[in-house]
Image 1 (spheres, rainbow, N blue to C red):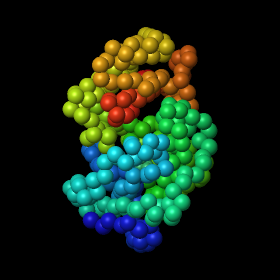
Image 2 (cartoon, rainbow, N blue to C red; image 1 turned 180 degrees about the horizontal axis):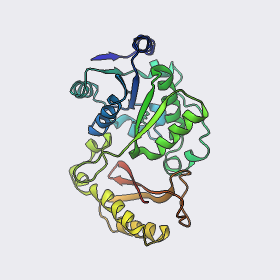
Image 3 (cartoon, rainbow, N blue to C red; image 1 turned 90 degrees about the vertical axis):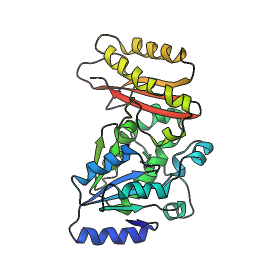
Image 4 (cartoon, rainbow, N blue to C red; image 1 turned 135 degrees about the vertical axis):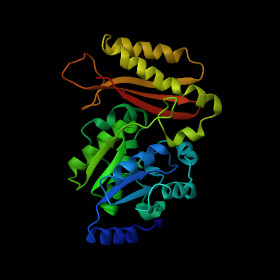
Length: 282
Ligand code: PAF
């Protein structure tokens, strides 16, 4: 498998692949790959002849140094896993300098307010970091199609906005959340869960499913209060937020409108690991 660490070298390789008529799909990741990432890559392989996977823990999207330091880095294992999927995968695993050229700062973006909701409220500057890295990666990889998981639904909405506002020549494809058999949304952070938290974390999806069931008959406020009570009673999991939001604006719904589409979003601490998830409601 070809693994590039230099943007000019991978750029030249991709140019020649394109000249040969290859369609380039792209899955940006921060590594610690799991079946969720592989499902994005497999989806991409259906419509692209080559898939590029970037593996880069992007410092500018972390608002917490400990979280950045502790983020799992497993490049060798990641490459081995990718080798089991296809020969038509190219890896870009750059250093911080290759991407940021000595100036590790995020650019400021205006995502029409999407960036101030949910994750944006609790992780200051997070989406400027995401916007900065994804825009740079798109400029380096020049993919035809790029694949993102709906687990980070707000991120997906922001990347669509980035592409629209900056007129980037790439099609953004959103892919369904991949879950463990117990319902827990797959995440690179799951490997850091202590055993007792691994056992209790499926409670997050179970609660989202109950919220989904209640959505037909109960108001968003009543469901939100019910979810807050469930977590207040829980010994191990600490709720950071639960909100029911309009999928287009990501703003918390006050009164349901039957012409709108809603989703429930949740962030929970399992010890020092922060987990997020979401579910479609209608
Ligand atoms: O979702 C992620 O893993 C990251 O936010 C991304 C898109 C790779 C940017 O660093």
